[in-house]
Length: 186
Image 1 (cartoon, rainbow, N blue to C red):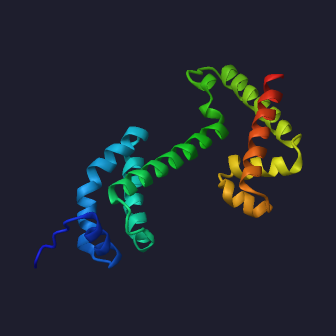
Image 2 (cartoon, one colour):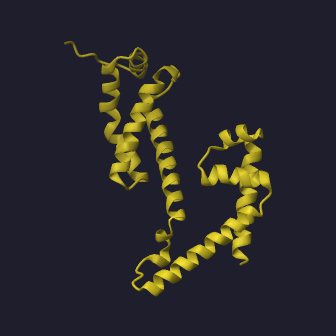
Image 3 (cartoon, rainbow, N blue to C red):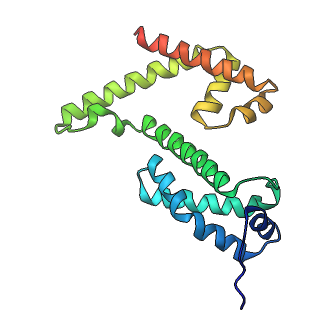
C-alpha cells in the first residue's frame, strides 16, 4: 500500500474532508503529543486529559466538512483543546460546591461533634444561598439557575427566555453581585 504524503495544510484538509482515514491518522500522529501537553497544562488529571484529547480528535472528525479552507489544523486543535479543558474545569468546579464533604472545614474532622458542626454550617450556608436566590426577580433567578447551576450556555438561555445574550449576561452579573452582597451581610 502506498503511503500518502501530505505536503501542506490545504492538502491535509482536503484529505480530511474527503473522509480519508490516512489524513486523519496523519493529523492525529502529528498533533497528539503537543495537544496532550497543552491540555495537561490546564487539567492535572491525566485520565480526564486523555478523554479531552480524544474528544478533540473526535470533534475534528465530526466537523471536518464544516472547517474553512483557510483553517490551520494545529491552531484549530489547540483552540478546541483549550475550550474543552475550560469547560471541563468549569464543570468540575460546580460539583464540589454542592457536596458538603468538599468544604475546607470538613478536612481533618475527626469527631462526630465536629462533623455535626460542619454539617450545620454547610446547611446554614446553603439555606442562606437558597433564600438569596429566591429573593431575586423571577427572570434573573431563572437565568442564574439555568446558566450557573444547570450549566446552560448564555446563548441557549437567551433563546429559551426570548432575550438577548447581553441581557442574560447582565442578569447573571447583577444576580451574582446581589448574592455576594446578601451573603456577606449575614
